[in-house]
Length: 194
Image (cartoon, rainbow, N blue to C red; front, side, top):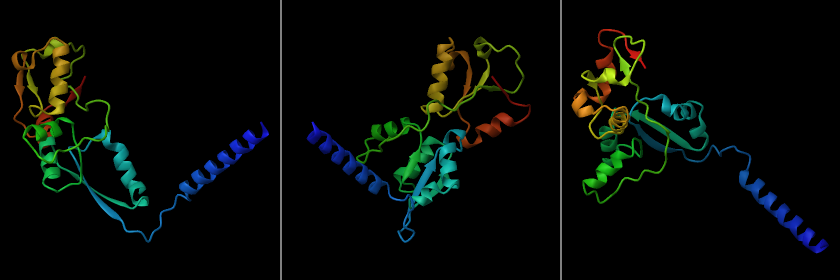
């Protein structure tokens, strides 16, 4: 029994030494070369706040990474930037890589991480509505997103869940460029969120 305890103690001690050695001091050797990583984001969003904070606080720089962040305003433009070599990483919805694959690309785009849990779309109105009900949307002008884009697909899913057929029950407008949607909404009256 003593031999087993001694062996277990030596094994634990060895593991502890390996772990502590691997952890190091946490300081990066400043003589190492910094690697630039070009990141294209589909939109400026509160959902990416951890990325913005990590860049601002220098966390990437501490690891030898120089992050060059570009907002490309739309999944199609972001994917074009990635595929054409203008970015190393793209923050986009997973549907964009499906579209690239469906076009017969021999060099597939790989989604490798989930950054957000939900879609960041809000239902807003120009006029204040005290007691909103979903059927109030029927017959209204409804500013959607790009056909086939994640925000539009999620929006249609939610509308259908409330008994609204987006193509038949609304005047669905989808010809506003992604970068101009906020401006299209803010023209005129105040905007109200539900």
